[in-house]
Image (cartoon, rainbow over all chains, first blue to last red; front, side, top):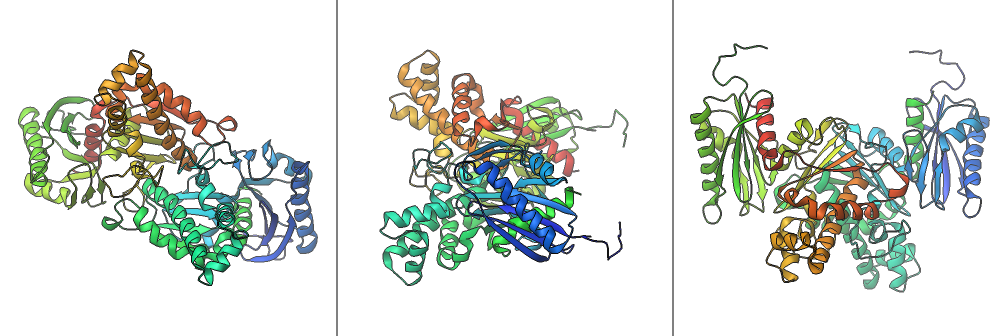
Length: 309
Length: 309
């Protein structure tokens, strides 16, 4: 299908990524290049359900006022999202549950809005135009406030029976371990997310993740040890995923990638010892995501464009 | 393609499953019904590499002598099998490594022999004609001496980039935990396999897995507690897999299925508490395998018939 090039909004797609701290919107053109960006803080606390929807609506309206009409709107949200776009559970979003995000945003904006899991959006973006480009068997793991992710196997995104695949952060790595806000114990994201690094840092006398990373960067022995412990936990989960699905590439994304130079060499080293029969197999390649904080929004725009006209 | 019904061997396919204790061969007809069965103990100890190949060769020759020619031969072996049929590592088979099983058996038998991972064979069988029939998003977990498995996602078997997917037994559920023959610690199969149940039983004063299962069946409190602990470890790994790939069905196979009436209710109960957001999602259904100990051999026959003419 071709359209005249001067039609308003032709090929422009809007994507919004609802994160734990901010909502980021991008308008991309039909080559998936970002031509404009918009952001709002993610509202927290009482009444946050309506406030989060308001923030997304504001971004959509501001984007259209600024760049003109868009062909499609896609939104990524952190949590279990049904195939119909209902947010079933979002522990990192004040526990929002059973919210028909797709239906409510479609009503408010009087247009079709596609809603998907935020990590699935990031997977689609990194797989299509990022560091997983062209890989048929790919795992994306996002290290941020929590841990999310997604799978490409046999050349297509695998969302599972209900669209809930990729909840890697809640795979248990120590069932008698640290309590998780999800109600279980020993979930991987309690040991290998940004929140976990912050906890390890606090226990070691540092004021949070950024401080321990800075200290490790300048060679502080205690900080290096804490970061190494964190890296080994990251590797435990990555190796488990590699044992389970044998990806060609594992892409590490999420906010922690900014500090990858500090912790990533340790992850690569520990991965070799955590992976089953590492010395006798082709090894999955560990890569860093290349789309940065925009991955989720770009992927949301792509999914919106694919399904949401 | 049709062939005259009286052609020798038409539609008959031979499959051999090399297990930790026995090698089981089946001849199936073109509807995958088993028409004959052959077995040998799996040789262990010094010189076992050649002895294992001898055992498989013996079964193939005996089968052909007994039922007449077969169209194809498939063999399932426990360990990492490359797409070319090389057994890269087999910790539960005396550590056989880098053995070109497909090439060596093809030479010995002067015909094409297809070799694949034993759990992949079982997956193909249970998915095609067993309790996973018709399921597009399916996980098979085999509980035996170790833990193996495989994945069907999006309606096809997903073997990963190198064919090594499904090594669920070596996902770590406690990185500081029990040592594993694979060289790591805390692998799931140290807690949730037949070997693990045997260890728990010994620790509790019972003489191995069968005795503790029998005692639990007759209501012995200590035995019930041991089996419950075992069941909870099985559930931890199943929940991790469900979090990762969101299957519609998880099929539990392997030798332990014979005693499922003792431990499976506990697995189902613990699975509900181990699964992320179990109360807010469609739950994967846990099913028992239906093909019993023949699953691997039947699947090997199927894979041989599909690829091995």
